[in-house]
Image 1 (cartoon, rainbow, N blue to C red):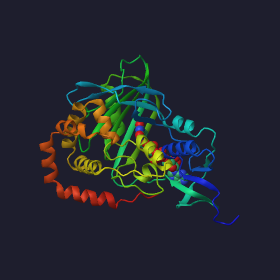
Image 2 (cartoon, rainbow, N blue to C red):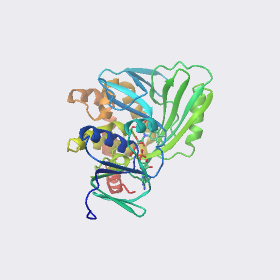
Image 3 (cartoon, helix red, strand yellow):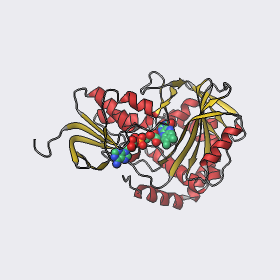
Length: 358
Ligand SMILES: Cc1cc2nc3c(=O)[nH]c(=O)nc-3n(C[C@H](O)[C@H](O)[C@H](O)COP(=O)(O)OP(=O)(O)OC[C@H]3O[C@@H](n4cnc5c(N)ncnc54)[C@H](O)[C@@H]3O)c2cc1C
């Protein structure tokens, strides 16, 4: 065989969530294709993998699916948001990945380099018609997660996920609380910060205490996701392809959309409105966290469930735009944007200058 003859149709450098989703969609579309999957870890990491989707079918394996969620505003008031057009689901990431990769073996090796048609690991090289690279390194501005999966001493009375709890104090960063009721006596309780905070685990533990929850920890999930402006990079998927959105840190719904487009031979062009809103929000979160916290609180508490998810999903209809704008305090937003134009422009230059390195 000539040295550069493709051995595989598709090769994946890194086999986390994005690769597993892309693999499963491509395999469904091209069942006779050959696949190579390589990962440096011998098993995927476990953390909560939550995602939204249109309500008629769950596109990924799910453990729970909810048709509503709650938001707790900064005064402690709980808003229940019914979902009609969308649903919200979760699984554990390792179990989801295993289900998506059922029957495929993953080569356990550290990839040293990958380009459009070749993957190289210690002393070995594999050629493929298409290579998808999802290796990534921490860079720039990050979203941090710390969560505990708790086995409670007593059953809880939480019926729907709390997607955002704004009662956590804003210090140098916006920190939000989340809760997913995963069984009658189990809960995943998590805090998420936009930007580094000194003691995210301490914040988590005081948040747990403030909710009156006591129990044993089944899992302590921690990690980070770099937040950059969406800039599609050919051949790169997942975090490495800048597919996780700066506005919310979610990845899975976008990986799924990307994978469907890849399978159809197309690519996603992100509407300017969303790039712009991420840019303004990122600048605000970094430099004016108190303002960002207030804006997010107002927006998320006032919008209907479907409108908020449609915005996050980047499928908001033109008819929903006035509802979105009026929930946001448009005058304050316009004033903020005008006054901080230079900062926002500098943020743009910094963000687009960041490389999705490996
Ligand atoms: C605690 C936590 C909770 C989260 N919760 C959610 C959530 O609920 N919903 C959501 O949408 N997003 C969530 N996220 C964001 C999440 O990071 C992404 O959705 C998703 O895991 C990213 O997928 P990925 O494939 O891009 O990266 P990863 O899942 O990190 O996969 C990258 C893979 O590449 C492998 N790799 C790296 N370097 C090499 C190398 N040199 N050679 C071979 N392999 C390599 C790694 O081992 C890894 O398996 C969460 C993140 C964290 C940390």
